[in-house]
Amino acid sequence: MHMLYDSDSFVVVHMLPDADRSGVADDALPAAPQLVRHGFEIVDKRSGKEVYLDGSWAEMFQMQILAWQRDAPTQEEVEDTLDGYVGLAQNPVVVH
Image (cartoon, rainbow, N blue to C red; front, side, top):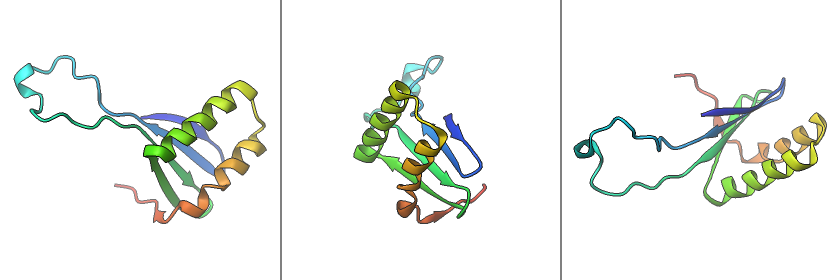
């Protein structure tokens, strides 16, 4: 898990699969192959809701992040883009 963005309005976290299995005995590995995927969690601090992007949504968001790295947008531009994902946020943030 990597924190990518944190402001007064949003938090963006990149969730990565636990692909590093070094130190685990071969007989402890699962017999069936597991799908290795990554995703992004976007938390809207204003509404207290979050959305988790995976699959094609995560791929599209990854392309947006790469564009941000190239173009160095302002905080307002980043937050405007993140605000576009707020409509997908249906889950209240719950602390475990």
